[in-house]
Image 1 (cartoon, rainbow, N blue to C red):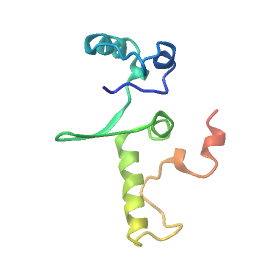
Image 2 (cartoon, rainbow, N blue to C red; image 1 turned 90 degrees about the vertical axis):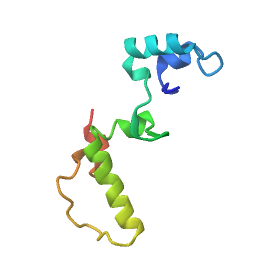
Image 3 (cartoon, rainbow, N blue to C red; image 1 turned 180 degrees about the horizontal axis):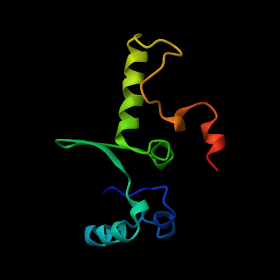
Length: 101
């Protein structure tokens, strides 16, 4: 099930110990979209999910892909520190979390 375990409704209803039946879960997710844990990748039977704190930084799949490509470049030693990336996500810039109030 794709329920966001950090959601207030999830915690209030004790869903970790008493998960709702599938039909009820679908109804709740349609009424409370924040109860859905956001999938970022669905390929065959594999799904990658973002935690809500991470999802709040990435407004769309483009920014997620840009960050992952940069991470791959860093891991492969191809990224240059301070190099300009095309259309950087301002939410990822240093100090952005402080400005977002």
